[in-house]
Each structure stands twice: as C-alpha cells, then as structure tokens.
Image 1 (cartoon, rainbow, N blue to C red):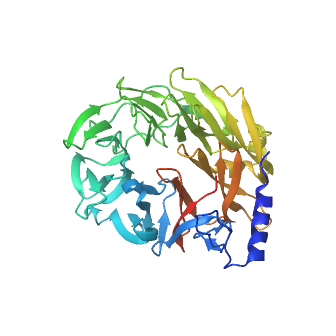
Image 2 (tube, one colour):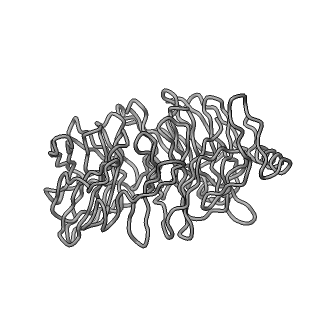
Image 3 (cartoon, rainbow, N blue to C red):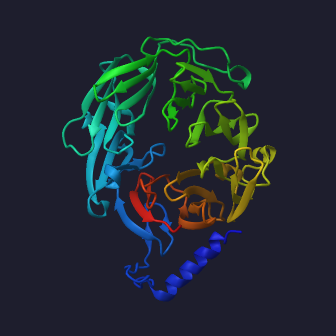
Length: 458
C-alpha cells in the first residue's frame, strides 16, 4: 500500500518547522544541500523539501491556456507558455539561467501573426520550430507559418487557404511535415445534431473544397497531400507513428478516426466531444474520456484493429499508457456510473489502478485521501516514459472548499508524492522535460500567473 499523502506532508512540514525556513537538508556526498523554504506557484504551495529549479512570474493579466501544456523548446533549454493577455493569444518563452530570460515568441497582431490571430499552434518534435495557424478575418484567409525558435527573425509563411473556418487543427508528423485539418464555415449551414442523443452514423457531406486534411512539407514548402474526407474535421490528436488521428468532435462534428494510409475516416460510437488522453507507444490503441449524458463520464480504451472499446475508469479524466501496454488511471474502485450520477459530490477514495490490455489483471492502490466523482472527472495526468513517472492534477474536498493537489506517481517504485497543493483557483497546465527529470507547471487565475519548474522525487 502507498503511504498516505497527508502523513507524508505532515512529516515533511514537521521537519521543516524543526529545522527552520533557512535550514538545509543533509545532502549525499558530492551533492549540494538543498534549502528548505516555502515556495509558491501562482496558486499553490510547493511541498517543503521539493527541489525547485525556478519560479517565474508571468506578465500581469496573463492566463495560461489549459489545453496547451508548457512546451519544452531547444532540447529543454527554453519553456514556452501559451495563454491569453488582454484578450489576445500570446506564446511567451523562458530560457537562459534559471529560465528567467523572457521573450515573446508569437502573439496576435505581433510576431508570427502581424495581421491576424493565432487559432492553433504546435511545437516540432525536436522543439526547434513552432507551426502556427493564423486567421485574418478581414481577408477571410488562413495562413500557416513556421517560427524558428532560435532565430529572432520573422515567421516563415508556408501555406495559405482562403475562406473562414469553424475548426483548425495543426500538428507535426516529423521534423518537416505539418498536418492541417480544416473545416470550412458555411453560412446558414445546419449544425450537426445527433438524434435522440445518439451519434449520427450517416456520413456528413464536406461543405467546401478547402475542408479536409492537408499535409505540408516544410523542407520544400509545398502541400504534399490533400484528403477531402467524407466527414467533418475537428481537433485532431495524432498517433506516435503519424498515420492515424482521432478527431475529438464538437457541437457540429462527431468524433472520428482519420487514417492517412487508407485515405478514409470513420465515426466513433461516442458522444462529442471526447477528450483524447493518450496514445499507446505502438499507435495501436488510444485512451479517451467521454461525458455521456445518459451513462456519465468514463475513460475508455479503443483498439484500432478490432474497434473494441473497454472501460478503464468511471468518472475519471486522468489516464495514460505506461510500460509496454499497461494503463495507469486515476479513479475509485467502488465507484459505479449510477453512484457518480446520483452523488457527484459524494466522498470516495482516490486511487490509482494499473491494468493490463484486457483489464483482467489490475493493481489498485489508495492515494491516502478522499475525492468526489466530479473532482476525479476534472483531473488530468501527464506521463513521461523517460523516467516512468506520472504527474496527476486532482482535487479533494475540504470544509473550506475544494483543494487542488499535484501528485507525482512513480510507476516503477509504486510510490506517490504530493508536490503542490492549494485552494482551487484558475487553471493549471503541466508537462515533463524531454528527459523526464523536470516538471513544468504553469498556473494562474487572471490576478497572478507563474511558471514553476521542479525536480520531483521518484
């Protein structure tokens, strides 16, 4: 069984109080002792004793975007935060000593988008370039540009598309290949509305020739492929091998699976929108969260070869593939869909489960605190294969209101650590460094925001 987080925290705080805020830990031979002092992100306390590389205040009024985790650029030498400031989207980079040198990498009406607004962006696999989708409403034009993160020059235009678009999704399929999913906006078009709450299985016509999937080769700056698919495009999550993508769906589009090799797409029997949580490293399966108004919120595993769908966790938004083909998920073993629907705020044990592909062999361990079905459903997880470690952002109820907790779980050691905690305020976005040693946390609520980089225990 795992040690209770509350007991770990109590012991740590007791040690801190006995040593004093300016004391140091006993360090192994040859390693500098770490000071034990109080450190805060923008909205949370860092557990005393955790090694914090830096804590940098983000610009006034800046709010990190929850759907865009911190991007590690230049082989981890710079961390870029995407968010909004005064109603405009901006990407701000932090590098140099202690990650304290600030610069604007791209922003609405500025570098990367001087005549438009950023509608989507993605970092290349090596972290040396950003792909930006820029919309110019006045010209009714969408432009794809790339931004060399080392160069201080202007962004490089790659492709241009006329029209207005309801959905734009950009990504990378290698160091020189950008996939772009577009769904054109048609005036007075009837919206996609599933009948009776069930997904519509009839193909939806593609309303415009500019809708579909484009594949752009940046080395030659040409569009190397165009698939006019018989389905509505939405935000895409690409498999590691870059052949298959999942469209999450939205109010006007169902969830879909896009296959570049087969030049086809098929609908998923799920309520839109879904949230793709992770892909298996071999690209054969993916995990997604679905909020079905009839059944409730659940996390599922989808097998591409067979189309089989298996329930992984009830009322959970935190899951990831670990090891070879196992799944780590946050949840509660005794929870049912009925229980989650009728008592969304009822206290339940917060647990993590490690299961094999079929779910026939599952290890369940308590995290040592209570949560609620609604809080588990709002939780997130980010995992790094480099150190076999997961970071979980979750919540627990208290008499003074919900408490946010950042939990580090070492899969190999089966150990868990509470590294940050505080009353729920604003948003939190997290990501691991390329080698999995450091965790970047961007959080803020409009009144204050910060980038915190720590070296969690494992």
